[in-house]
Image 1: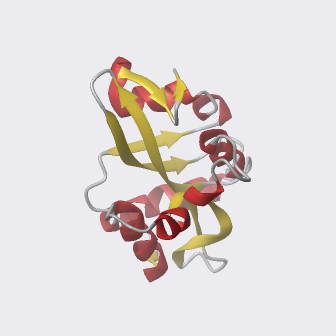
Image 2: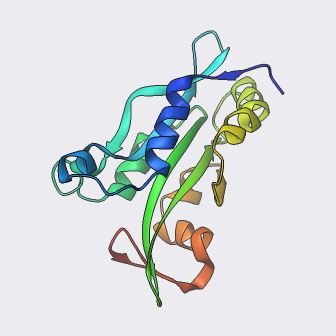
Length: 165
């Protein structure tokens, strides 16, 4: 409980990502595949980080592999929260799930780690119905997509973003 509040835009982004209503191809292209959230400069609220996102329409255009593109958005020396809309397959079916990621690299300043850690509940409370939460402490934990595969369903996940694991 750090007294940090969550900006309305963050909640709007979450709700837009969570609701998978049938939309036109144009609307689908504008859907966010991944987005980062950061603390505002005054450390009073959690906001949507400007231009740190991947849209569904970018995939196959400017983004070849959404997962590795997402990993590249993460700052090496600071913490972030992120939502990643994972598309994956098990032996039985294709699935899509939102993953809430708390990025806290070891190289981030201690003060930053403390405030992000203590504010995590504030943002998580707003993200109702998220099944998967993943705390990541460095690139080694996240750069291999199979780690996310394990988070999503253990050894039953056979592919992530169309790439076999």
